[in-house]
Amino acid sequence: MTIHHIPLEHLTESQLLQWKAAYAGLNAAVEVSLPANVVKALPEQMPMNEDQFWQIIAQLDWERQGNDDAVIEPCVQVLARLPETAIQTFYDLLSEKLYLLDGRQYADHSLLEEGNISADLFLYARCAVVANGRNFHENVLRNPGSFPQNICFEAILSISERA
Image 1 (cartoon, rainbow, N blue to C red):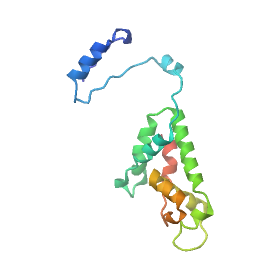
Image 2: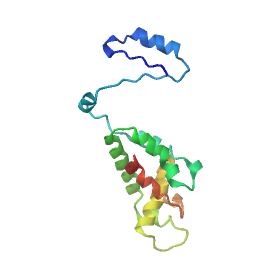
Image 3: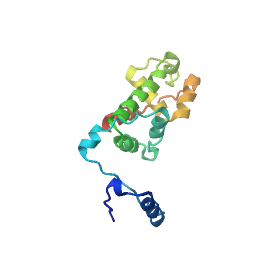
Image 4: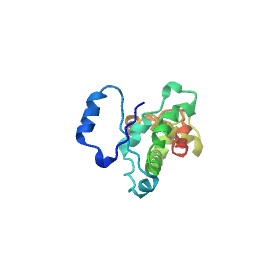
């Protein structure tokens, strides 16, 4: 690995263009190192938006189905690289998506057989709807009859905490 230490005030557009041409296709990166006291003084980044939330949910690794920790790990890794405000916003957006599905019309369709469903099981069933992505979530909101039956995914609740 080659590291070039150049103070920002000496870095030129010409140098960047030279590196871009010389290292094209090599998965090279430019990093900027800031002293800790400068990083603390920078304004907080904007919290994530709804599109970013759904992009993170799309990272769930269903090929690892059966190992919930492994399924959510890509989401945890993406979220862990973001500022605390983004992690909190992810949590808030997840809560909002779950709340939108919190109604009798959805609960009635979440079981194969009629009967009572515990609050916890219904929460985990709503988690499964969110875990299936934006389009699925929006479809269930429009059509409660499409709520999946007897499917739960509790692990999605721990993504923010683990990040």
